[in-house]
Image (cartoon, rainbow, N blue to C red):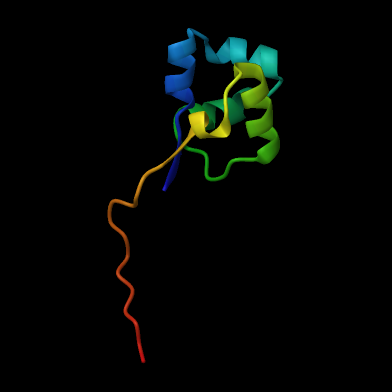
Length: 77
């Protein structure tokens, strides 16, 4: 599962969501869903704006974690 680490990045930089919204132009609901890990998908345009504003790479904002309970697939022959 891919998770967003925006909360940690902002904390490390000492920024607020309000400052990020004003400087990046990204809507508050989008930032809110990314900040709290509720986002289902990550737009390339939004990631581009975040990286340009925060001077970071997409890998700093996104983290891959293996699924906690992966579904077992039965292979049929």
